[in-house]
Image (cartoon, rainbow, N blue to C red; front, side, top):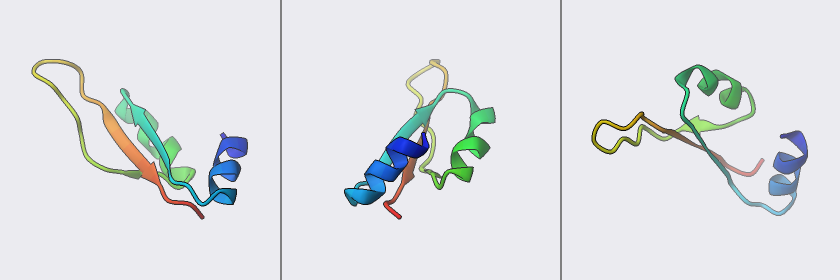
Length: 55
């Protein structure tokens, strides 16, 4: 992940991920991602989108 995030920073681009497991959110937060909310259609499992601005 560090290599990709370094490339995003170098190119001044945000990084976006979605996690289907809420237990993974702290892992992504340690890498600078911020939760954007929850996506859920009907009774499907929720997705947790996260965005990391370039640093």
